[in-house]
Length: 368
Ligand code: FES
Ligand SMILES: [Fe+2]
Image (tube, rainbow, N blue to C red; front, side):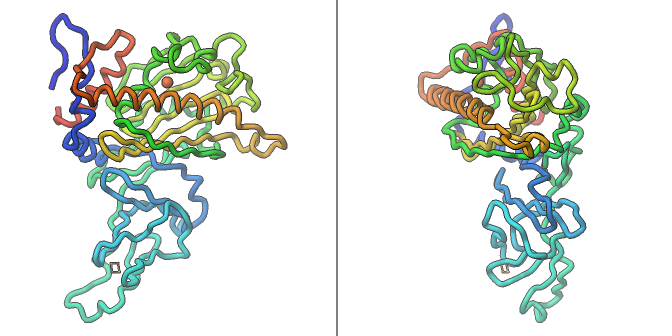
């Protein structure tokens, strides 16, 4: 599977890595069903009974706040005859989860509480049929699930990031705006596009007024994430339509963080962008080799949200425009890669992180 040879530039992956259903299925099984996946924010589930459901990697999962205040995740599958339990994205259970088919009823801890007409079934014991759990953890307000039967700790996957981002106080921030995007591209092209700014002068006239596009300070990639920081051009205070900052700097930030944006792709499905005064998160939901849903959310400090005249539209407009520029070129990129004339091409020295991301994918798929 190596795509290097002596004396030649490191090259992009073969077309089938982007287009083949079998490759996509392997990614689903060996990457998405094994790694921790970002699914939302713990603050969305404030009250006991509050839930979200998320479909990914062939699974549907309910994440719910229990009566004891703890978060738990369960497969969204009835233990009777397998019916999907919950068909809405979010809501609040009134103390229990009931299947719409024959009314098997589960507690918020997954225990089977009632199973009508099962008394006469030989050997039936409710204790043997709780909802199947999935692992669930939070990091600084971000909610993650893991579909593996023997998951590594979340900390292994985000190793080093909690310390780096602690000054941002991410768990205090609250979501103010969300946009769903449906993009005709492969999920890996979204991650790759996020990880390089060589395209910024060409694709993003507005963003390019804010950053020196070659000025990224990248961290060495790990096997589970990559990223770096980019400083602002003179006179720019944050990423907004005019570069002006309409909100106070996040309270924990030092001098350095006030003048840059952190861009981190936490594999496989979380793009975390931290500005001096707000956070943008993008979660990635692959639907097929050539189709990817993306959910972008903008999060702000509660003190700012509470102020009369709180302004946030400048940040949304800036990023919605920039995101759409990225999605459009990622679709165009997919069109070329999935057509007959495509051959793998050489990466530049400034595309090292993209090559490393490719290696992450290939290693996960081949078990190296
Ligand atoms: S399938 Fe859920 S109660 Fe029968
Ligand atoms: Fe971009």
